Image (cartoon, rainbow, N blue to C red; front, side, top):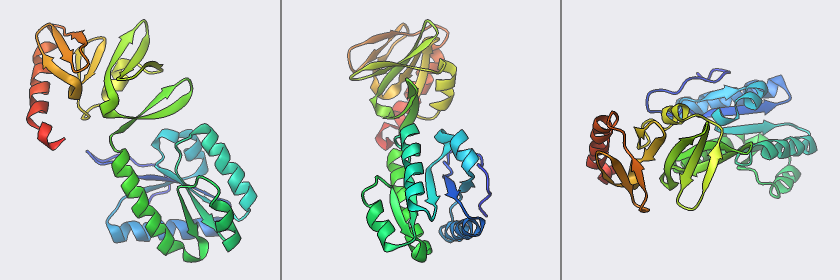
Length: 246
């Protein structure tokens, strides 16, 4: 069964959250039923969120399904969503052939026909699952009010300095609005290790870990605290053992 509210992520599993924006209760109930049926058929678990939950929890939404009979209104709302979240995936429900033709000029993730809802929605979810797999190693960060999706391997390390967090990439460095402990919790299980109170490092880019410093593959050396070294060494050695699976 698909609850009408966001759920929690299972251990090691990302549960898709679908934001359903529909202007008619009867249509909404049918769409939720179809999603439940498809989820049960595929052995999936997902959560359908209301309009209020979509606007309040952007980062937790996998995609938005937009079902409004008024095409112009639907398109305007889609543009509003994209202006807030440029990477937002929107599945548009088309009622007429003209709606499909008009929607082709919009950057919708997928277009489903109202009269072929089950078949088209199943195809949309297959496409969504492929996108989720390719994006599974991407991480959300907020920069100057905009959300960015960054592949984890592009991150060298995160540095805390003067109450700011600097995200060091191979090509640039920019500031994000979070503290290092929050980042460490979010990056848990993604190959990062805390070597000092100011450094959270991507082990993929560590060439050599020593008692006093970590040498990165770009030539930088970062300080390793004595207190953190034993634990960091164990984590790094375990990471190396599994490199052939990464």
